[in-house]
Structure formats: structure tokens, C-alpha cells
Length: 328
Image 1: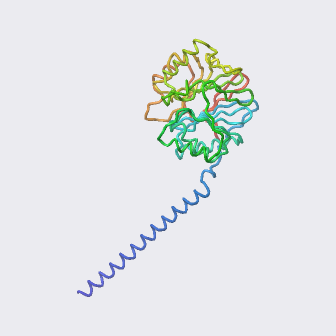
Image 2: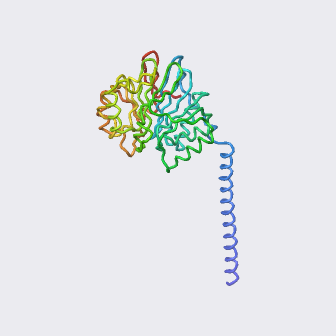
Image 3: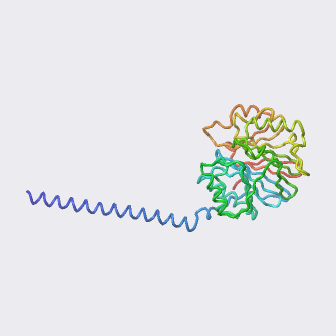
């Protein structure tokens, strides 16, 4: 009986030893696989293999605005008539949206790309980091007010690694595009701003008689300030030959994702925009766009990225048209 028990115990121990060895081998194999994948990604970045989106061809003389679906992030691409790009903000840089942005930018096949960060909120600057790492960037416009913490230094590190030209666009500053297109900076109000949203870069874009306001994340108090300044002098924001007729705005990119604390009646009444674009995430926790903002925007035709995905507006010969669901 004792010999039989001893034999059973020996078999149990042998089985346990084999099981332990197999488990160690499995874990070793998994670890080796993870290390191998990490090395491959390090030496040959996965994102370089991402296929480009098939964006419809742009006709000669057209300027296009692309309002990308970046969830609760913000990203607007200005595609000038000769094909150069200005990417204004880039979403939060998460894996999914970062990959999406890379594929979209690849779809243009442009050799001249500039970036502009309106302000140092992560949902605006995060996606710029992968662009700086995977594209040859001509220049980047950085905000006057940056967060001291929260990961913004990752952007500045990526800028340094890319080696592109660094500029700060300030009030009345002009960005010239091809075909006579231009953007004029209306905000921040001064270099001594302290509020990160109200210090965000607001741009007025003009091309062939069509005017666009890209309002970043300014609040209703900043909107009212800009509107009251314009009421005092309608040429206040003009910069030399570059006129800024705010009261003749056709298209408005709505401030702060349609927050209840922006899109003031005073601001909207001044602009009189017939088309409004809202960048916001489906089912976002902020409740954007708010019912209050939507009510104040009732006089405009509203296009929302959470409902329609990417939105493309094509401007040509004094007119424009809006397209959605155009990617193949």
C-alpha cells in the first residue's frame, strides 16, 4: 500500500513539473513575441504602412475645408487651390483617431504641409504629434499660451525632432495661401492672456468672395468682446490689403464643440453665417452640442461631425457646397 502511494505521489510530482515547465515555456514565448512586435514597431513604425484614404480629386481653382471626425477632438484641414495644406488642430492623438488623421493626410499626397495649434488643450494638439513624426512638415504655428503640465511637452519635443520652422501667429497676423486665399488672426486679444480657451486662435478665412470664421474654443465673453470691437470699427481686424468683413461671414466653425457657454446671440447676429459646422463626439459626456447653442444657431444650416462624420466644404467662384460620406 505504501509503495502504491509512493508511486502515485511520484507520478503527481512528475505531472506537476511538466505542467510548470509548459507554463513557463508559454509565458516565455508570449514575452518573446511581445518584445519582437515592439522591436518591429520601433524599427519599422506600423503607422508608415497605413493606407491613405481616397479623397475625391479637387478641381482646379477650388479651395476645400475638411472638418474631420475626431470624436470630441478638433481638426480642420484647409486645402488651398494649389494643393498645399494647413492643418488646424489634430484631435486628441489617440491610437484610433491618430491613425485616422494620418490616413486622411496621406490621401492628399501634398508635399507642403503646415500645422497650426489653436491652444494647448489635448483634444486640439494631441494629433499633431503623430503628424510631426510621420510627415515632412514645413512649419508649425504654436499658441501663445501653453500648459505647463499635462503632456504638452510631448508636442514641443516632436516639433524639435521634426526640425520644422516654429512660428507664433498673433492678432492681425496673416497666413497667405495660393490663389489669393488668406487667413487673418482675430484672437488671442494680447500676448498676456491667461485663460487657455479665450487665448485660442480664432481665424478669418477668405477665398473668392466666401468668408469663413474658425472660432476655436473661445467663450461667449470673448465672442462679445470681438463683436463689440467690430461694431466700433468694421475695419479693425483688417491687415493691410487683407480685409476682414466679419458681418459678411458665410460659414462658421462653431466655438467649443457647441458648448452652452459659447455661440452668444451677439456674436451669431454679427456674423450672420448661413452654414454652421460643429465638431463634437457622438454621445460625449459634455452634452455637446448643447440645446442652448443649437437654439441660438437656428438661423443657420447646421452640420455636425457626430452625426455626419467628416464634412468637406468646397469653395469656388464666389460659392460653396457641402459634402459628407465622400470617402471611398
